[in-house]
Length: 112
Length: 114
Image (cartoon, rainbow over all chains, first blue to last red; front, side, top):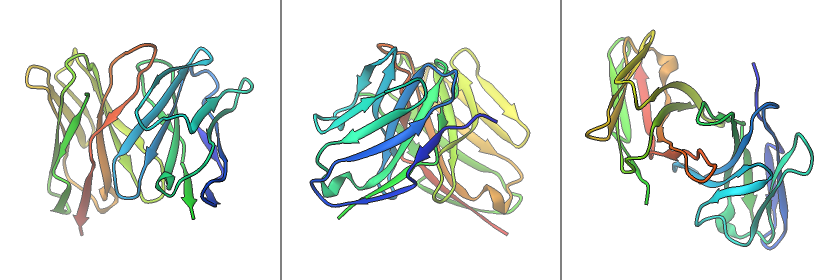
């Protein structure tokens, strides 16, 4: 069964440091997403990416965040200067269109 | 803005009983309504979904109903088993500017007591 893979599974970083979270979406999918889930809360949309550009972003996705698809397979989320409140699970997802979204297992980001 | 409300936040049932989780959505343009199961430390996994041109869909012990007029949709799990224990999220989606983002409900923690 196709799957979305994310690395690392857990990242600990100091406040103010830059982090890059990596994802390999399903190969024939066209739409890519990042979501965030603060511990015990709901999954929140951050950004969607289609045709090599951001197609939509939420209020959470401010100037500290950026996404990139540097090659044909990877999709990355960069946080330039991490804050304590960025601590959360970050999920990557991909879809063909308005179809089932496949989620990765997540990266737990801990900012200390 | 778009919003999805989900109730209850926690649900405890005896093994073999049914469980019902309800959601309402605000954006009338939403046309796709998936349900996800999330186990501890894992990503959400789709268990069933429904589109706006359908009122009900069933897959073995799981069913989803949709009332587009009232903007309600519900998940029904019959003959619950301990392995159904997890957090369940409803979500709503509709195309907007080349994005099919999901707006999630707040989740329901289901506990099935053996």
